[in-house]
Image 1 (cartoon, rainbow, N blue to C red):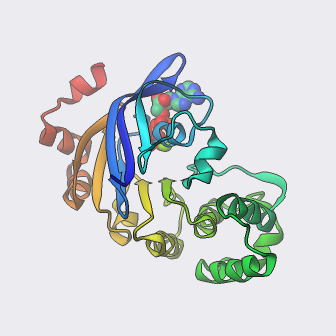
Image 2 (spheres, protein in one colour):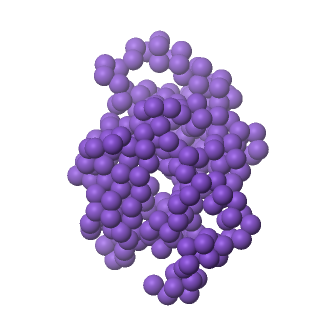
Image 3 (cartoon, rainbow, N blue to C red):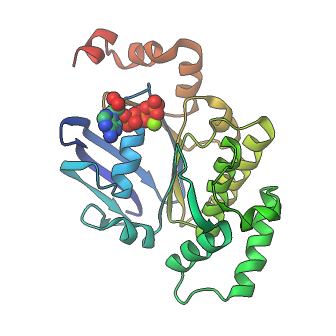
Length: 256
Ligand SMILES: Nc1ncnc2c1ncn2[C@@H]1O[C@H](COP(=O)(O)OP(=O)(O)OP(=O)(O)O)[C@@H](O)[C@H]1O
Ligand SMILES: [Mg+2]
């Protein structure tokens, strides 16, 4: 079946297991939300999916449209259309935004787009995201404000047109107008051939990007899955509300 399938994934650092027997399926064409308490493994999952070398996978499998990902290098995963919008986007001094975007766009397209077509599309995307065109001549993220960095992640999204995107708290630090722009960017990608996992702590982005499903990651595994009512429950009663729903005691969660 088309989509991202994670089966029995156990992974972490050499010294520490962070994800434990995690199962998740995001079908083609769907956007799922991933929520969960601080430090329970959301960013770790994002990094493991991308193939970050610091993390070790001890068991389980990950398939994108039926193809196994775990043996592939980071660049190979990117070529297959996996994309991560970082919780903390890195500054890349010496590489301008336009050069960076052309590089990542070429990675996905065979043969690469010609320069004028690339620039025309870039101009459209900049206008759509209300990014000042002068940004493309600056070094990537260097000196960018927190919100500008997040908007830059969405510019990468629209340039790359990935098969599967992971947004790690892309909503954090955004002003209300920027939040709408980021949501519009994500919504513009929706449809067959695109799926995403939106990691967030709050409902405000999810009010704009209505997810097809919502998952709660706790203690390195999916503790609950459902629809938008999970987001509302969380807002109202916190994680204890979710634990009551699943019959898990807080003590049990924090003891292990
Ligand atoms: N490089 C590392 N060194 C030490 N501990 C790490 C490292 N990376 C992750 N961890 C630990 O793994 C656990 C999971 O971290 P992770 O960043 O995945 O949490 P999270 O769910 O994304 O939290 P948040 O909501 O705060 O972003 C945390 O206890 C964290 O301290
Ligand atoms: Mg995180």
